[in-house]
Length: 484
Ligand code: SAH
Image 1: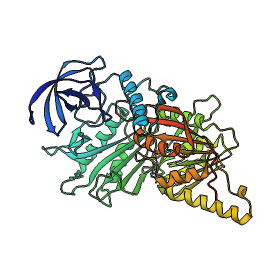
Image 2: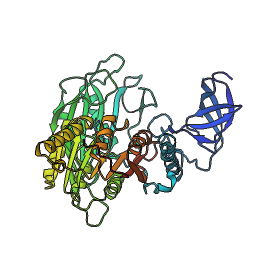
Image 3: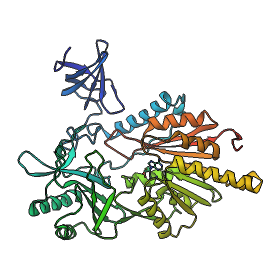
């Protein structure tokens, strides 16, 4: 077999990245866009010693799980790896992925018994409250906006992403019409020239407030007033309004989308949205969200995810809690309603500013926020508590932590952070994770040092993609005296 050779293959499995897997003559093939149960014709694209990659040419006999992908550019765009798979099958795929990682990486044999059913969506499209569209030019010089084709920086024109709200395409149209009208050049990555790089659109699903932030390769945005007028005059569905327009300065030739300086053109520099818990007695919490702040992209599932985290935290009103990687304080403020005291830590200063404003906005007084890395702030806080105990002469002078919630980015927690969690010895640790591989790694460490995994629940925050969110609970098994 050599490159471009064509062959038929039965797909029997699927990789964590969503590629179909089939075996032929002892050789393992990875075929993107093929599903388990498909019989396909494929062409070899890359060959290694025992395995290879192939391109899907034709589905000869389709899997039971196969359906027509609703989006016409699903295959070109790298965003939705699972669109051709029925939603039911997507959910099973994600449950399996979490289980496999917990077993393979974490060594949690028998974890099936703990797995609670994945929380799926009733309507798994149009859920995303945030989109970042790259802007460029096609061969004829026409301005295009859309998505990068999988693993490249080639822009596929697509303004109506089926994961986001329908309004996005009209907002994009206003921006590109304005660019054409005033001769605003699109950014050309290969030369590092041109101005307009990305358009970030965010929508508060509960508030109807929309944010538009243009990412530019420059310090100033010419004709910005005309842009503000164009965006503000856009007819939108009842109850919606463009509430914040800004630009972000990013002159670096890197893959990072946002620059760290934001210039406001219209509005207060943030939009507001609110989150409601699922329990009958829970009240809605309002949040201010700035262009640089992290905010969960799926508001429907976010409420379910946070309610699960809250349930796992098992709060009675007496507990002191840390929320590590707290963003704009979403989980912290949710927990604060049921805890005695909540501490939050987050690396992005603007997010912490939002978190403090959000606490005030909601009249929440028992939450305190720190800017910094969790792996630096938490150990420092622990040392301070130890000092205090030493000075006062009795160990109880150090504040006790009952519950620690962590919600790190994909790379998981820093070891220093996990080490400090062990020193603090909370009764429970609630780990919210968007990557079950790093989750499994971190859980293995905590469970080798006195904790026990007691609950696991995946939550489908990202339908149509291979990504899966997961909440787990750990309980302290033994009391280790690490205070000295
Ligand atoms: N819990 C929040 C945010 C979770 S996303 C929510 O649900 O909305 C992860 C957050 O961790 C991001 O806001 C990111 O800025 C922050 N972060 C990344 N590395 C960090 C670190 N080393 N220490 C603290 N925060 C970090």
